[in-house]
Image (cartoon, rainbow, N blue to C red):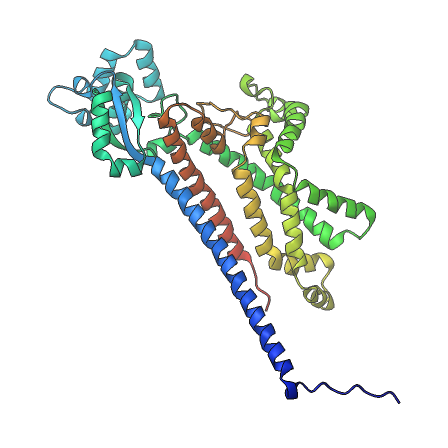
Amino acid sequence: MKRMPEPVNTNSSGNGSELFETNVTARNRKGVIWRVVFLSSTVVGVIALIVLLLTIINDTFGLAAIEYKVPLNEIAPQGKSIEETTCTEADVILQENVSKNRYRTLQNEKPILERSQTECVQLLIFEIAKPVVKATWPLSESITNEAEIQEFTAQKYPEADLVFRKWISKDFITSSQSDDPLRAGIKTAILGSLWIILIVILVAFPIGISAAIYLEEYASDNAVNRIIQTNINNLAGVPSIIYGMLGLAFFVRVLEPITSGAIFGFSDPTTANGRTIISAGLTLSLLILPVIIINAQEAIKAVPISLREASYGLGATKWQTIWFHVLPNAIPGILTGTILSISRAFGETAPLVVVGAATYITFDPENIFSKFTTMPIQVYQWTARPQDAFRNIAAAAIIVLLFLLLTINATAIYLRNRFSRRLV
């Protein structure tokens, strides 16, 4: 018979308990260190986000030195301020001070007498007084150095008015682009971004989910499907500019009769080259499609196999199991990946520039075959301008961009929580 090894007596020497205590102490120490590392990373991320938001807000508000070619008190009716001018009085003043062609253009846009009193006052200011921004200061300097700014303005711009300006406003959101930062708005870019994101959602989401279901539930483990899976993983890391080149070559040039709308009876010469909203939307759909597929696959994999077996045991078909059990439980993960993908598409610039996004456009897109610009491109275009005021409206545009992005994400999160079902 084999002789069994004698147990080590650790109680007599105390070495076992000491070793155990040493190991526990070392593990606790490592746990504390990693906890501090994780907490520090979170704090750094939060601080970076706060600094970013404060920087944007700092440039969105502040003092501005605005000089008028014609003083406002010379425009207003006698005995009234410019703010008290009625539309009837504004109509008479405009006829006397602008050219007939310009007055006719303003009337065609919207009759003067049908405008609000605020709109009439704005017309007088921009059409006759013609304000020019000479200098701007961020919110922090406007609060802490107001006296110095007033003195500087009085010396360098004696004819300018120093006013506190909110660069983000209702007029900013509802106005189109302009060379004048006081009149420039972001409405055209907002509409362009929303059109493109709508196309991305309608195209990429169903295709991505369908591909993930096939690869996880139906595809067999063979060489062809492994190659397909490998290529999907690789495509998720391809630089976005490559997708822009693909969109230019295929959607803009090869499919030009379709993407320009010519085949459907649209004959707009400005979009006859295929550089339209539909081309941009399809390009961004290709960009985020691999990410949606991969995230959907991981969400489907996370559904326990026991749930499928229970469904089969009750006589359900494969499709019934997928539709009524697998997908409802995978919805939270699928929508999480979709939210991240749409957020990436919403902020993309490089592929849209290649496809043909306009950096300056003054008319709103009317359909998917219209020329377009987007909010990130508009922000880039304004920050490249030499005037300080354009950086202020770029900061205001970033706030609008963040608000729309948060709204879209919040809607998706609500839908995720609304339609997700937890396993019992």
